[in-house]
Length: 88
Image (tube, rainbow, N blue to C red; front, side, top):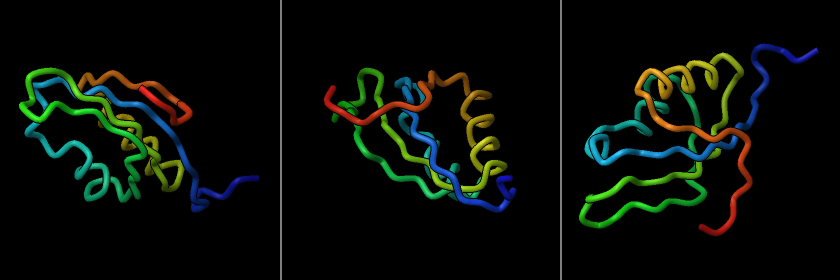
């Protein structure tokens, strides 16, 4: 049986539309949901014209991870679950 306090990892790929480039989306995952977030890969244009992509490794309890994913879903961000890091 997995304890509610057991730390888990979840790998996701997150698309950040250009409208969200100035929003602290990843920072809120840390501050509001208590997650440890490791950016394993990223692509974001220097001039912020197009969408960006982040491969994230989220670490936290099941409750923390579920809360963070719910937050991302409420923003309407595109999320791929359980990705393996690799090349673009």
